[in-house]
Length: 107
Image (cartoon, rainbow, N blue to C red; front, top):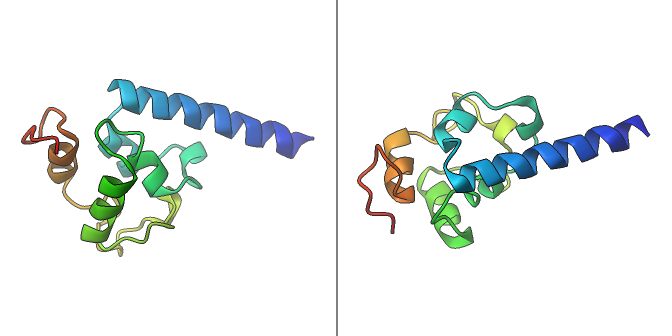
């Protein structure tokens, strides 16, 4: 029963994180740069899709550009990945998402 409780807690916390990402209260660079424990087993593409203006296609295209597999988990990112553990340039991610700090083109 303890495992079920922990799994449910992780799901609730991830759902809150995704809502915070969508509402702009949390920045994706912060999450990927220093991920909380409950995010470590989440797929990077799922977290990216919570960012405004990122759907499945744009998230997949962005990961392909960074040469990171769509099945990669947040905890599986490392300094040895082509993205440098934080999907490379945070400004590029901000520009793609159209968030402050990027070009704002938003796609």
